[in-house]
Length: 78
Image (cartoon, one colour):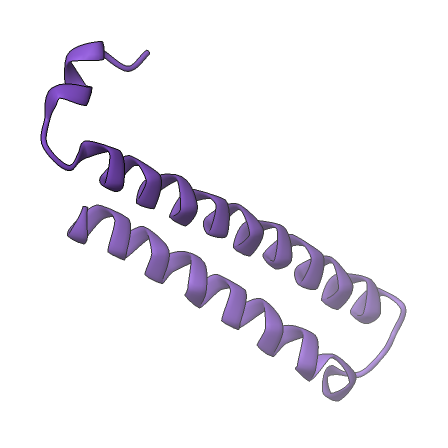
């Protein structure tokens, strides 16, 4: 629960809105991590070579990096 007194702090609405946006972006990054990791695992399980899943691994790494950067920004800046 959010205490109603919190809304008396100047600028809190902007901060909370920013947190909501970053948390939504983080949720999408987590979703993309799961999708690309699953694609990589399935492809490797089916016997495909490592070279055939390089794009999915890179997409997973980008989603992971985005998620981590959002966490760092949320914890450090807000």
